[in-house]
Image 1 (cartoon, rainbow, N blue to C red):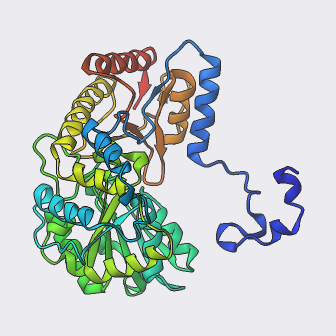
Image 2 (tube, helix red, strand yellow):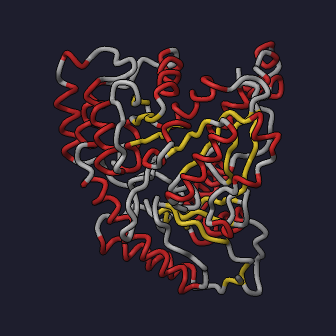
Image 3 (cartoon, rainbow, N blue to C red):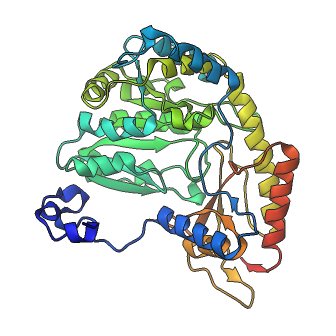
Amino acid sequence: MTIQQYQDTYIQQNFANRIGGENYGKDTNIYKFEKIKRAKAAAKAAHPDVELIDMGVGEPDEMADAGIVAKLAEEAAKPENRGYADNGIQDFKEAAAQYLKDVFNVDGIDANTEVVHSIGSKPALAMLPSCFINPGDVTIMTVPGYPVLGTHTKYLGGEVFNVQLTKENNFLPDLSSIPEDICKRAKLLYLNYPNNPTGAAATAAFFEEVVAWAKQHEVIVVHDAPYAALTYDGVKPLSFLSVPGAKDVGVELHSLSKSYNMTGWRIGFVAGNPLIVKAFSDVKDNNDSGQFIAIQKAAAYGLARPEITEKIAEKYSRRHNLLVSALNEIGFKAEKPKGSFFLYVEAPKGVKNGIEFTSGEDFSQYLIREKLISTVPWDDAGRFVRFSVTFQASGEAEEARVIADLKRRLTDVEFVF
């Protein structure tokens, strides 16, 4: 039987309301990443001889460091590493605590009680609401942003309150704009810096404001920091936990996916307030049995070598320079981010004497369809598109060629800004 045929059976009536109830699967709206996927397939079919320049995927374009890969192979061959890891091994916890000290100048993290590994940041974000959210509780999210913490808040009967990130406020949330009644019901505040998709970086002063606000309103801060070590042009990596009082109000999530090219390895950690870490560990213990010990040991090897990330950051910085320069010569108002591999730019209004773009999605679809350039639209805080400098290119000469090709494709028409 097909899915459509099963929709006429009792299975369809038994879906939980949190995912749509009896209407699950009948929604005809297409998720924007699915639209991009379909548009890319159609563009490739229509122009099989033209290279698709993919700047939409937020995933590293290179393998993990050879030393990390070798360490995985070495540890995977040891019989003592074959079993369940549960809430993690001591080697990884100690490496994570030392990494926070070495890279972010975070002192006093207790590897025994204030660090626990996660199978990447996404599962950690999915599980944290189970520690705190009861029906009617509020999670404060920023938009644009990564929705997982909010999604699971809703699954648990909680509510989400969105705070807009605007260019005028340097894509930092205006905490004073949050209504008092929301503050009273809020349990969690989600932050993500350097930010996806805007590339904006936080400051120590902003984090100090967050700590004071969280203490005033008794809200727990979840700082999602997968790009924290990817900073450019002399900007030092900044951890929320480096700010006085941060450990009193929250935790920080780190991942090796972006900073160590280990996306598919699924390894990260939660660090900070020991009571929150303990609660997360208990919930986690009822969700998974831990990441493969060999992966944890390979990750510990990487965390002890932050120069691996520094080299990766140099590549992304170089690519950002090329992309920003090319876009600005065309007429965009692109600003190099202080961190992350994302470049967030406002879409043009249209093509002179041609098509109009009423949204970032209109422009993004046009780029894929007409120029075979893939980006991601973000319309929930303005008419923006996100470029990612994780495009496929081996070496500096190839990077320059890709950007030159992108510029050529975008200059055979005149955009209206």
